Amino acid sequence: QPVAEQASARSAAALAALRSNVTAKEIQKLARKHERRARAGRATKGLLVLGIVAGGAYAAWRWWDKQANPDWLVEPPVATEVGDERAPLGTVDGSGRAVLDPEVEAKQAEAEAEGDVPGRDDRA
Image (cartoon, rainbow, N blue to C red; front, side):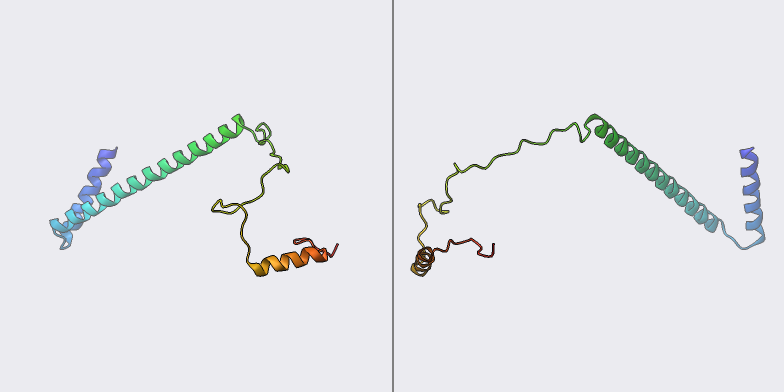
């Protein structure tokens, strides 16, 4: 069956070439063009199938991972308590107490004398 179809297609092409001014070179060029398109189509189809298979494998892996490690089974990390035992913040260079500008020290002393505590809001 396929041989008969191929023979009839070739004979029709040969007959069309004989009736018109089509050269053998043009026919070969057209045949190469068809072969290139067929090869490109097969490559595209192969890449598409490969992409679908890879996507399916990834989806299956995600489903399996979700089944093996459900969210409700995973324990949250232990909460860390921040106590008052921590050391006060120091300077970056490790020199101990930070030396403040004299103006800043004066303002801080003035605020402490008035009873204001820095960082506290009086709107409460």
